[in-house]
Amino acid sequence: MKKRLIQIFGFLITSLGWLFILCTMAMDYWRISQIGGQGGSFIIKVAWYWSNLWKDCYTDSTAVTNCRDYGVLWSVLYVQAVRGLLMCGLTIGFFAVVCCFVGMECTYIGGAEPTKDKLVFSGAVFHFVGGEY
Image (spheres, rainbow, N blue to C red):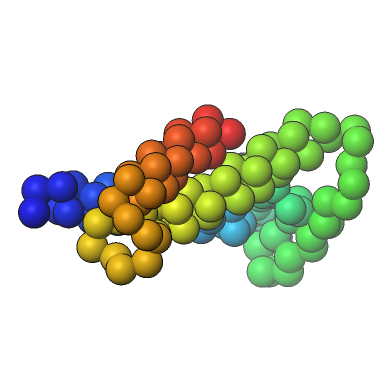
């Protein structure tokens, strides 16, 4: 019973971590900076510059947003590297979730007990490797 609870708790924690990283990749506001808003003027112009892994955007005080999507930008190589590492980590994490789910003691798929233990161990290794990305 204790082994099952530990496996279920570990599965839930790692699956939630994988889901949070997936949500983080989809977030728009990775970097935000405010431009303008200087005092002493009758017209207050404020603009926000924000970006993420997929695009750069500029929003002015009239709520008009202009965005520029990142294509293949070799001049911004670190963005491509971060994209690639996050996608590799998510893919490895997905396989880890599947291995851990099949290898848990409380599921009826996955075969005998030694096979399930190997699946859980491989899922744990995949989680650690995916987390390093």
